[in-house]
Amino acid sequence: MASPLPSPSIDDLIAGFDRALRTLSGVATSSRPVPGAGLPPPELDETERRHAAGLMRVNHTGEVCAQALYAAQALVARDPDVKARFASAARDEEDHLAWTQSRLEELRDRPSLLNPLWYAGSFAIGVAAGLAGDRVNLGFVVETERQVEEHLTGHMDSLPPADAKSRAIVERMPDDESRHGAMAQAAGAVPLPRPVRDAMRVAAGIMKAVAYRL
Image (cartoon, rainbow, N blue to C red):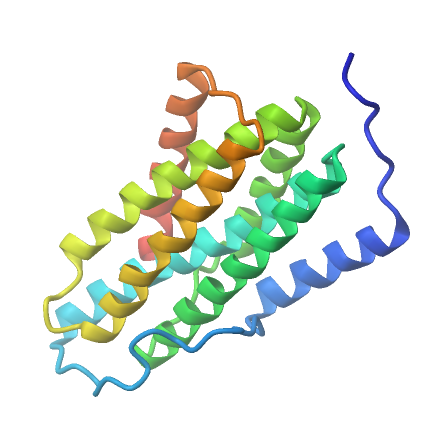
């Protein structure tokens, strides 16, 4: 029999609201140096700059979604250890959020205009995953991180070869994603059904296509 769903404390709700504000206002801070910060600015033509900015905007939006997912999943997790694991992963993802925000600014571009929508939708998905139980909740993390790693590999192939600063960030991020997936697997994740995995892939594809432009 599944353990009862915990009632979020007022501290949990305040922390969640604070995380949402920091994520959407662009004031995320990194506990680790930005990869490639010491590299000289690359010489990019306007087409290359806009393409690199579009890809980094997609990555930034992905980190906005990650903040929402982890916040929601931690909020409804039943096991305190699972809740703590989600909180730890969210701190790593906040570094990614700050890194991609920094690179967008260097590329003289902006985050997605639809980030509030992406955050709200991802939060709802995170709650739904959590309501299905901690093992499904963890399974959602495993599949999400697997798809994110694939997506980042694709961006390494697509970024302008001269843009070493963006490449340094994108190259660093999969290490954390892989570790989060392994954490969830070790904590008892169950595989998600194929239709759910396919739906996640389709939703992510829509987000990437829209965020690249908006």
